[in-house]
Structures are given as C-alpha cells and as structure tokens.
Length: 241
Ligand SMILES: [Ca+2]
Ligand SMILES: [Ca+2]
Ligand SMILES: [Ca+2]
Image 1 (tube, rainbow, N blue to C red):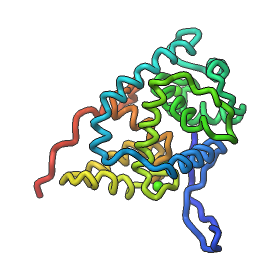
Image 2 (cartoon, rainbow, N blue to C red):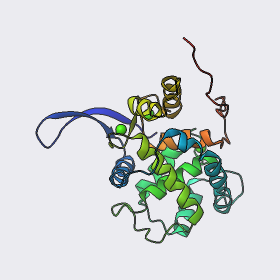
Image 3 (spheres, helix red, strand yellow):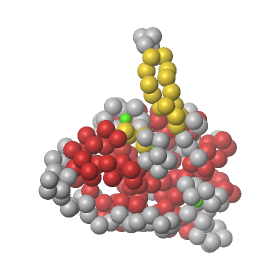
Image 4 (cartoon, rainbow, N blue to C red):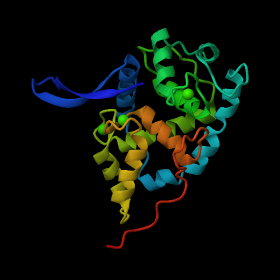
C-alpha cells in the first residue's frame, strides 16, 4: 500500500518543518505534479459547485468502462499486471517498471492483486496527473481520451480546491475550511464525514489517490462495495441545538 508518514525535515532557512514524507517514488511524483498544478490555481469556487457537477462526472467516468473492457483481454472484469503493461503500451505511456508496480499496488486498494473498474478509474486519473511529468514519462501524445481528460482535470481541480496550503495533501482542517465556505449550518459535521470517507488508511491526511477513491464513490461509482454504505443520500439533516 502507498502510505505516507509524518516526518520532520529541515527547510531552506534552517528551521524544522513538519511535513508528510511520501513512501514511494510514485507518490513523490504525484505530490510534485499536484504542486505544479496547484501553482496554476483552481477554477472551483465552492464545494457545493463541485457537488453540482457530480452527475456529469459520474456519467463521464462511466465511459472509462469501454477502455477498461478493451484492456481486460480475457474479459474477467479485472485487469492484471500484464494487461496493464499492454494497456500502457497502447496508450503510449512509458512508466518505469517500478512506477507501474507502485501504481498497480497503490490502486489495488482491496489487495486482491487485480484492478477492478473503480480502481481503474483512479489509476487512469493518476496517469493523467502525471502525464506532463518530465521525469516520469514522455507520454507527450495525449491519452487519446478527450472527454475523459476534461473530467480528470475537474477531479484534479477539486483536489487543488481542497488543498489550501498546496502541500499535495488534504488535511482535516482544509476539508473543514473548504466545506465551511459553503456557509451551511451543518457544514462542520459534513466536513468531518467527508474527511473520514477520504482518509482510507486513517493516517490523518488524504493523498490524491485516497481522494479519487472517495470521489468515485461520491459520484456513485461503486462496483465493489465491501460492506461500506453507499453515500448517495444527502447530508442535509441539520442539528438544531
Ligand atoms: Ca483490486
Ligand atoms: Ca494540504
Ligand atoms: Ca490517508
């Protein structure tokens, strides 16, 4: 699994700073790519405006199914490492062997050694984020998925919106801050719930991968629910205290 730990590093001016330390090269690349993207700003103005986009995002992400089926050569509804390698070749994506392994492991969130549909969406979106990373690949050819690229960009944009301090991770406070901006009375409670839904490994911070898994669930894509309740009902009830 792709985990980060909190570490202390010495920053330029000699002072010490607490920050999250990526545990794999892939995760470090994802943070770098995200920070580059964050420097460009964000077009999402509020969490509510993002929620309004959920149906469209859901509809578009489901189009990944065609690609998924194309790469699932033996049609067993999962993609194994070998199929993924071939799939990358076809898309002109040149990840290192190590990155492919890390990506596979990171996205195989249920640890069954294969990539199912919702894991595949997360995987493609991470590839989208990394596609301009000069260090990791020269996939200068676009992924050839015009509709999807716009949707993936919205997902990246949503993460940028949440990551207020632009360190490549979303904290509980950032989630509260982003949702509080909506000004709803129960926003604090909603924010806590959203954060818990995002922080899959419960380490107190949310990386882009964790965010994507939560997001696919929020918009309604849930093809292996492992006893976790579907979260499609709204969080509208208010506390009258
Ligand atoms: Ca899996
Ligand atoms: Ca952050
Ligand atoms: Ca986490």
